[in-house]
Length: 165
Image 1 (spheres, helix red, strand yellow):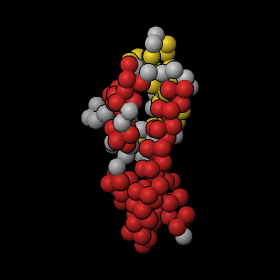
Image 2 (cartoon, rainbow, N blue to C red):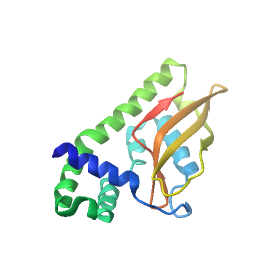
Image 3 (tube, rainbow, N blue to C red):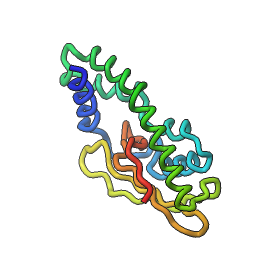
Image 4 (cartoon, rainbow, N blue to C red):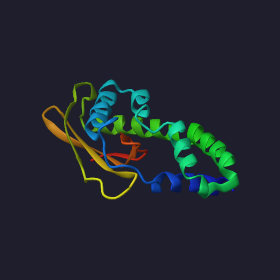
């Protein structure tokens, strides 16, 4: 049941229909710039602040309550536990891994500069899409790929899976 609830929660999050206008909150570029600042400061807290909050996930679950039926409250409780004990710690570990990997590649995180973002234009009502942040260090460009950046209520958010390319 525990796995089913988490899977249902994540399924609802990835299938909810959202507007494609991005004027209100964090645009993709604003989020990318904030990611670069988090990397510059080596701050996992600044990075995780760009991830969807538990309240945002709960709101999505509420908007898709038909999927959960009478198990909505149990699903929200289970997801909250999963979010706090697994998702957020894994997000911080990914961030630390990127810092370490970058350091091995000679990136001076304190001196990186934002260059640009690369992503495909939103199509339909997809909730996630890949987002690539291009930054430079010591005159060399690097790419940070966020595999599933979220778009929640017209705001871009970082996803769990990040890669230094």
